[in-house]
Image 1 (spheres, rainbow, N blue to C red):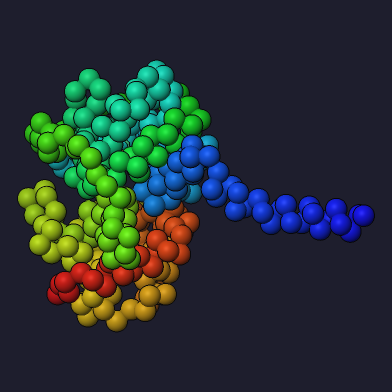
Image 2 (cartoon, rainbow, N blue to C red):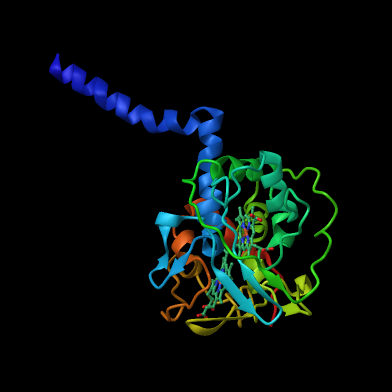
Length: 282
Ligand code: HEC
Ligand code: HEC
């Protein structure tokens, strides 16, 4: 009898993970949203207060990081559901519009360095998942200073986003979606000309990032000999998830290795397929 019960319990335990995966639509949507915000999208790389030890997860997404550059002094917003200092009073549609179109409920435009050009490509399903998850994070009271822009901001980043489907179900299309709309790899790794990415040279690298680490330069991620042409898949994945270059050199910030280390094996192999599909750039 005991043996039978033990077997029944073991069977139940084995069955549980599968049941949790299918779950209710809401649980699946929330899990997807958590993964997009915390891991692949790494919103916390900008929105979670950064200390010398990395992000302060006790105040996740509470804002306050300052991006001090010649054209602006931008301060990351508090995107927790605190009603006074965060986005607690915004509707789902208002949060989705802020992420995908860069427009706040009061009509004010959101400025750089938030990668708003690429977030326009987030699918309807994924932006809904992000919004659902953002509503569930612990509210943190943290009033952040206003950003100051010394450059004119555009009235909008494009026409209103009507509807964006999920990417086609093949590795290169999924990887392109992840590396652009979700993880904005290509924002950092594509050269900037006059303040805009030159997407005729997608992935060619060259952008400089200054911080407490000194200056880091985004590398060439195209399949050229100057890029990842001679790298194995495992070496590319190690760089993304642990911040170690092919030669073993530790990579400097601001890439979000701490978040990308939890990307799924499928996501990582899709991103590699996409990088290998790019036109090689010297
Ligand atoms: C590279 C840094 C960066 C990344 C990555 C980033 N943001 Fe932002 N975000 C900012 C900055 C800076 C602001 C404030 C800009 C301003 O003051 O106009 C902002 C503003 C916002 C706002 C407006 C909030 C308010 O109260 O006005 C929302 C919502 C938002 N971000 C959500 C997100 C989400 C969700 C993600 C991940 C998918 C994300 N951001 C990724 C830098 C970033
Ligand atoms: C916020 C900017 C930023 C984002 C976003 C970013 N990177 Fe990077 N990445 C860098 C910088 C800067 C370096 C170079 C660091 C150094 O040399 O110390 C780098 C280095 C790398 C390297 C190592 C290349 C080499 O030659 O050593 C790879 C591979 C890489 N990034 C892939 C990616 C992928 C894939 C993504 C998206 C999942 C991504 N990066 C997102 C800024 C970024």
